[in-house]
Amino acid sequence: MFSWAITFLIIALIAGALGLSGIAGTATNIAWILFVVGIILAIVFFITGRRPPM
Image 1 (spheres, one colour):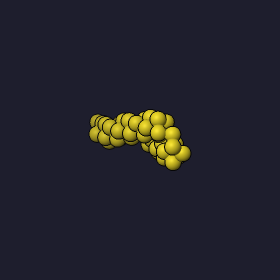
Image 2 (tube, one colour):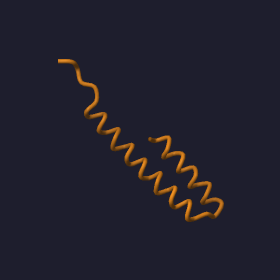
Image 3 (cartoon, rainbow, N blue to C red):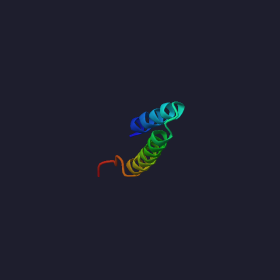
Image 4 (cartoon, rainbow, N blue to C red):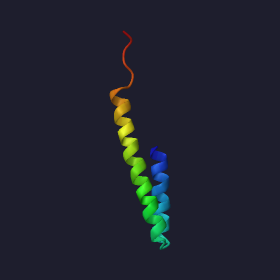
């Protein structure tokens, strides 16, 4: 999940440097959403992760 967020962030930076503001904004939003979803999933998996056998 984080690798996709980083990929879209790099796309946004390149598009922003080339002056493609629409693509840069969209890629930035996608990167932000993927990052937040990744953080939420990491927290959920940390909390409900491996439990000792009963």
